[in-house]
Length: 148
Image 1 (cartoon, rainbow, N blue to C red):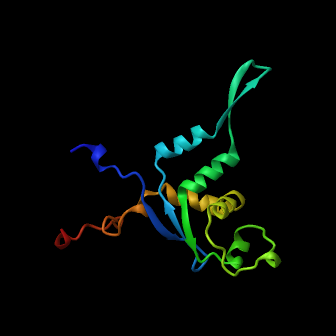
Image 2: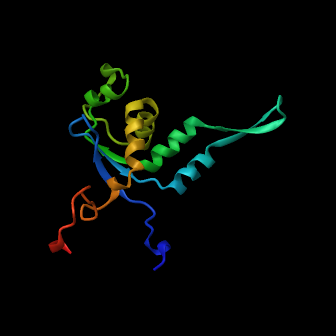
Image 3: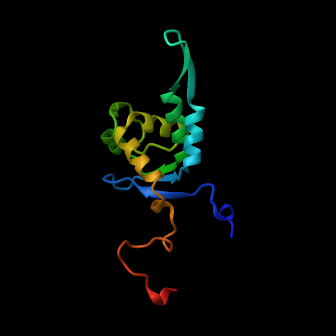
């Protein structure tokens, strides 16, 4: 059997954001290869006159935009009240109780909420979040011989 035949390009799952009841986010896992591709795509080469060499710098805004597009696929239950705990907003300008998902809204949330960004990074790189429930194993518990 070849490992290549077992690889899955991407998988999504719904994950509840801790502490904000009803706020769930559909996330896609991000492989190491995909992360490297995003990073490479967001690098800029600038010539440093002092050292007379090119130096790489990461375009943070572009990285956040591409990272959000690849990982945050949808959400439900993000209310204005929830959003106000994640980032500083003007609640007087909020015209709807629930904030709809859009690529632009996802980018803004990732870019402006350190709490959401930290959680996102923890979740999308943890493979356990993307395993089917039948594939998940409880740590320290022996497999049930009857279920084989």
